[in-house]
Length: 108
Length: 117
Image (spheres, one colour):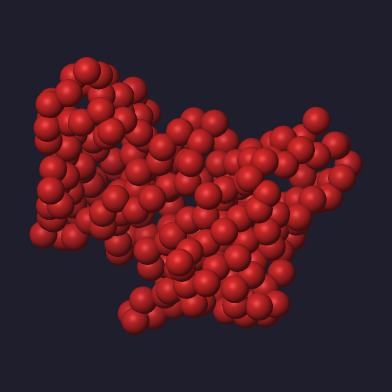
């Protein structure tokens, strides 16, 4: 079983739609969690950290469920510019472990 | 501007040659990392360094070597022993959190795309 698992997608959604991604992790000792965004042939960029209480940044909401060992990312009112691959990242111990990414394509 | 730079952006190498990828940061970060990304896959850790003159192997260190002589610089050498070196190489840095030595938020350079001919 992979340490961090994501549905690779692609998720094809129309502009304005709400879309959610889940990510599961296997190490119950994981301490911190992140969502990164990666555009095609570019480096990953931090989208948001994920806190135990859940957190929101504009149209983006991240949730953590420690009991079930998953984190989620909700994007409301999707924009064309949201098209990218979203990487789930988990810190257990000293190192980050990356999921394979979920590809989102927002269509006009 | 503060940030991480990697060079070159594209690199072509013949089989059997060693190549060195550059990574420089002016963020005053203590920790630096090298990852490899293959198409459709997540990032895999090659080497990391949490302090000058010290570094550790990651999950896929075979065929690679690094040095950390200066805080700002963490070059990666892809040796001829690396069986399948064609990939996208990403360097990152972080300032470990106050909770202890560990991975804090990592910031990435723009990457080097290596192709072996």
